[in-house]
Figure (tube, rainbow, N blue to C red):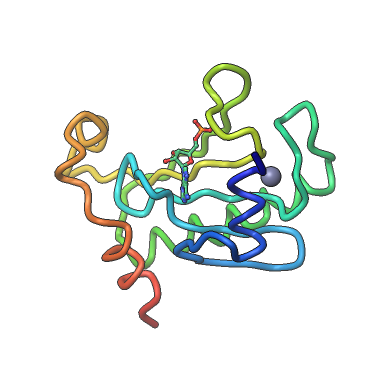
Length: 131
Ligand code: AMP
Ligand code: ZN
């Protein structure tokens, strides 16, 4: 079966797209751990940190700065965590960087356990797309 993130890049599966350039795509995680949980992926298929080249890694990091700023400005989050899973903790085998906003008032750590308090990504997308 073909890689699900490659299908998103090709437009065969929809996503809540936040940013794209020739190398990187950023979109909201469909099952967020907090409001604004974003995934950054290279447009070329790399499996994980061992597989991805330095140039692409740099592009991902540059985009992570933009997304961090966007989340801070538009969602008023109080912190941002960057995570990248490999091996058995990596569910989707196409390199991706998670960007997870943290909110003091909502105790984000607990939010992960109580998913019902997290907004639908569709509603967060509406906020992020406003100017
Ligand atoms: P990982 O465990 O690091 O591989 O995380 C994979 C992430 O991809 C999870 O947080 C999923 O919720 C997310 N995910 C899976 N399918 C989709 C999709 N179609 N659109 C957006 N995010 C997805
Ligand atoms: Zn892929």
